[in-house]
Image (cartoon, rainbow, N blue to C red; front, side):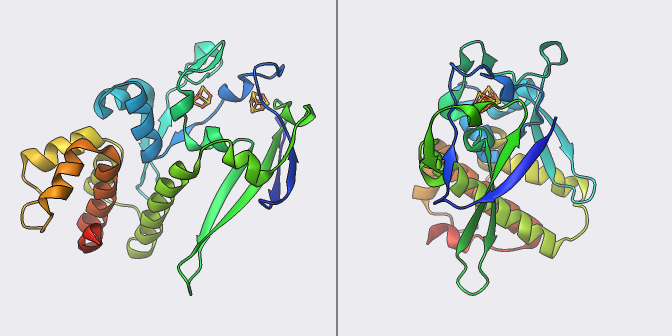
Length: 248
Ligand code: SF4
Ligand code: SF4
């Protein structure tokens, strides 16, 4: 398989169309190595109406990066189906409204950097051209920005950028691998959200941290607020950074 990556701007035009009429329909959902972000897991487990422990056990594999100790969560692929994604069907993606960010972006890849002076996040995109993807031969021209707008990926990007901030902080504060306990804490508070919620409340872990009752109520019912807490919890536990900005 050959792959070309070409940097592109949001204003660049992109001749590409994807849909069930393409002869390559679903080919991009096989033979892949699909890593999931915490926000991907949140959306998928809620789409399937599953709690996070059951979702993670049924659909994912976990390993820890040898150099960083950070958890890497990937979709479990079945060799008998050509390593197909567990959610691909003959008619397309069974979890389409809640598909992961990388599925939304494809055939684009996204990277970010933060401006030191202003703190502003800058985005960079590249076009991935692989042999199996015939969408570049189809009629359909739009700008890169228009393509992205049609993929409804902004909410994923916002949440995934918070993870990148945490990883950047980890690399600065703990350049080597996390300990097993630290790795497990990272996994629990970001990926295994329902278990994290249960432990937070059953062990009164927020007591003494000044968390307002209204925020506690939101953590009980809203997974996105819980994920925000998980990010701050990891920062607090791993680096001793207090959670004060949670309430600003
Ligand atoms: S989640 Fe959906 S779009 Fe993504 S690889 Fe699986 S079937 Fe394809
Ligand atoms: S055009 Fe590309 S992205 Fe669309 S179904 Fe075919 S391989 Fe997948």
